[in-house]
Picture 1 (tube, rainbow, N blue to C red):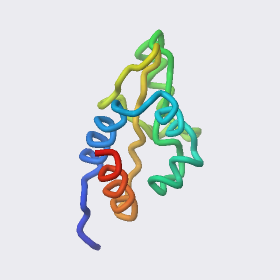
Picture 2 (cartoon, rainbow, N blue to C red; picture 1 turned 90 degrees about the vertical axis):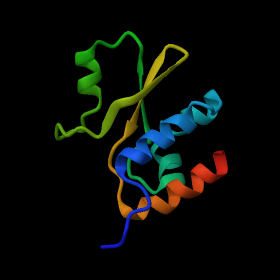
Picture 3 (cartoon, helix red, strand yellow; picture 1 turned 45 degrees about the vertical axis):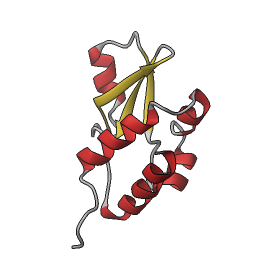
Picture 4 (cartoon, helix red, strand yellow; picture 1 turned 90 degrees about the horizontal axis):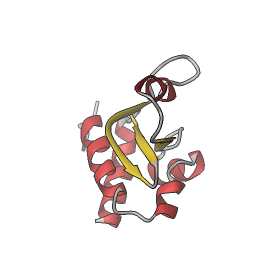
Length: 107
């Protein structure tokens, strides 16, 4: 197995920090599966967006897929315009180069 450029935790932290500097329109693009696939080669949207009034229980349920597995994390959540954003957690070695390229572009 090849060496990873980033750990999953580093990816989530670095991307979450960089996303907070994007425009609302660019942020919303990452709530879409198609844009997230092109930019990061992931199968689900990068971000999960829920209203700030969601309870902790609602937030916990929102991050689960249809099989009950957590696919997002609130560990790096941020708020914008009345919404909270959770980030995708399923990262693999093949994604590292996409993450590195994007972080370089937005820096």
